[in-house]
Image (cartoon, rainbow, N blue to C red; front, side, top):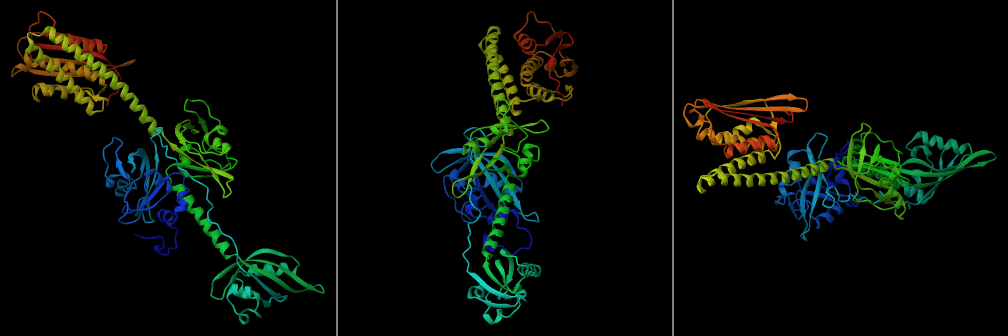
Length: 600
């Protein structure tokens, strides 16, 4: 596996993966949330303490360590075991895609479990090749949302201080180095003969700088920590701060006395700090969640691209409290920005967790989100600002609504189904010739109801095309005989209530046609057709059942259970009309009822 110190020298910018890999554990621990990094083959190469806390264990890094995930065990949200090589990170690396808001169940070594919401992003080099992937995940068990805290503590980029020797040299009015102490010579690596007696400009890297220094000193100005670059004997560049003044005799510039302080470490540390800050900003930009920071007064100092996408606007640095345009509580009441979770976190100097809010964009659209404001402190514990992550929970809210609607619909359908079965049992028993006849009829009607439920289950109890429903109901009873059975009509999807009632009705008509009607002979034919007629308040579905070529039809002496069952399905359950005509040339049935107009 490629280690940090094994990176080849590059003249271009490092890739995202290289930037992330170059960050130490200390920097990763500053991120307020669980995060880990995998290489192209899925071996874990970086993780932070938040990830360890969630996993309940510390995974091994590199080859022969942990792969794809540091979890003890993984499961689907349904509880089925999930192999490590089938987890979201493995799928992401294999497919080269991003994963957004995918949930899995993680088990810790102590047996406790939590639902993790994962956001995974592949990381590519400048040529588009995948180098690895980053996973940010949170515990969403408590409030069905992203609830694993993405915590970020304030850490100084790198502590450094200056403890270098102070060099002293004297330069004549003509710019010739007259004297230099050991510290000065040691600073630049020259011996006295190589340094003293030469012109000072030979050792300065920047001609305009030494020209400005000599001009200021010759004019009587004093220099205080004037920055300059000196060339050392070994060819290296020394960044120094020069403090100096001029010596004048008889009003004439005689020489200068210069204290040279080596600030190379300070300079290099500043470059390194800026680079680390750039890496941190790159990391925050790479996060798939909206992140922004403020100073101690709540003025925005940074925001990433995801924050712009969530808020629907480009915030201004200096805006206070939040990147959003307008805020609302979950009950719809207005939420002033100075009372938002970020404002509370800064005013009370504490992290805010377990709350939700709604952001309104300038275009009027609204986004429910979960905020995670966390105060930042300096080394002395003083409040210096805060970081906030806004997690879009729109999909989770929609899923909750769908689940509630599905449960309500299921409860309603179970009650209706039980009532239907009870009615079938009672009416079949009353009209049966004997126990065997009653059992046979009751079994047939239960099977029809079962087929309806099977069809609806295949479509998750959603809309069902009427043509599919007719074939599913009729073919098992009558058989597939294209020359004798014609099924046609306008394209329309029907809901579960209509599907159940039509299934029972078509099943009764099919069984009657098979036993006594057109389909009881080799010459009989059957036509089932329907039309959808637009109405002011919806659409009228009109269905015709027409049998021909069978035995002569006789009108029954009394209305049977099948007729009463069909009437109940169409007239009572659907509020429609049902007409059954026992014409001598063949049974003709017409039924109609109102439906929602949703032609496919």
